Image (cartoon, rainbow over all chains, first blue to last red; front, side, top):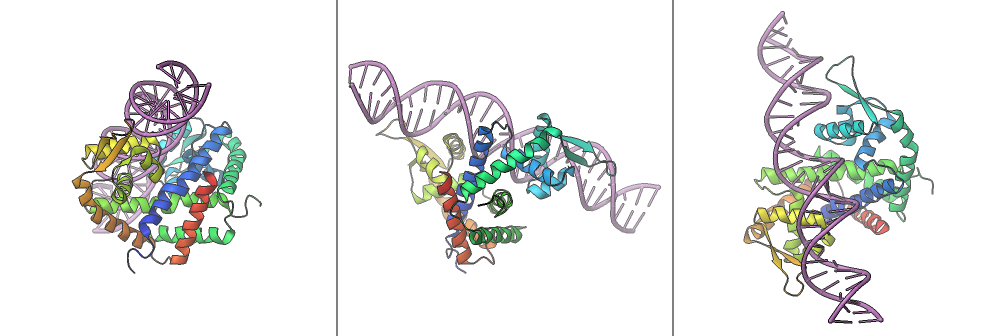
Amino acid sequence: MPNNQFKRGELYSVINGMASTAVARRLQKNFRTAGLEITIEQWSVLYHLWKEDCLSQQELCNRTFRDKPSITRLIDNLEKQKLVKRIASRSDRRINLVCLTDAAKALQDLTIEIANQTMNEALTGVNKDEIDVVKTVFQKVYDNLT
Amino acid sequence: MPNNQFKRGELYSVINGMASTAVARRLQKNFRTAGLEITIEQWSVLYHLWKEDCLSQQELCNRTFRDKPSITRLIDNLEKQKLVKRIASRSDRRINLVCLTDAAKALQDLTIEIANQTMNEALTGVNKDEIDVVKTVFQKVYDNLT
DNA sequence: GGCATATAGTTAGTTATGCAACTAATTTCA
DNA sequence: TGAAATTAGTTGCATAACTAACTATATGCC
């Protein structure tokens, strides 16, 4: 398979420079417009805690595809904003369970609505089959590299 | 169109958290393994200068989808490493033309080869039609948001 | 000509990421 | 049991991102 068959350098530029950045920037902007002070990275952590509360930091690493120092500092900032609390695990004293505060629980519906609106805006004119292909490709890429 | 028709929150996670990050990380690692000291962000700037040398910083903003402060600091670091030089434009004294040094020109073939190999690795099992769909979707997303 | 506006680039402050090195607690296994 | 290896989390350092505010130059228009 020749290297330039798919113009892969170009695809790399597209993946990393353009669409994902544009979506992230728009979502951040929409949060700010709604008066929310959280970053999209913080939101992505909260998103996983809304699905299942009181995860360990390691589990948050796995689910958000971040490394441990990144999660440590995201949790630091979320704790400063009183959106999560670190609670020591009883069964394993190495582990911090990261649990939502009431303030964070109150943000769930609004922020997810904003994220859905943003994705609707971003995906106008894109059909379900195309989205399925994108998801399949990204899963393959991830599997190929890990 | 109902919000959850495409599980868009999930797609957002995929786009931003998983595959693009995995590709970026692998490419950075492959650069390091080859003894190259440049970051992938610096490489993406060089990539556009290899295609057309001596662009203004603003033009680099447009082509790399970065904002002006980001380009300022990327050029600062590339200049420290003696890979580019800022040259004042004669026709417009506000403009810096960013030009490659010989050292940067020497990196072109090797780094592009590494990027192609990385994309081959990432895209194993992905066919051309699927890649075309991904590119189309990302272009639509970008157009929708800008 | 001269003032308002727009454009190119820089700087400051905050957040986030990656890597490497570190501490503390737990598990493995000889 | 106890030393070695593993796992969870933190810290330090460098790079990069966004926003907002700033300087300097150029353009538009009366």
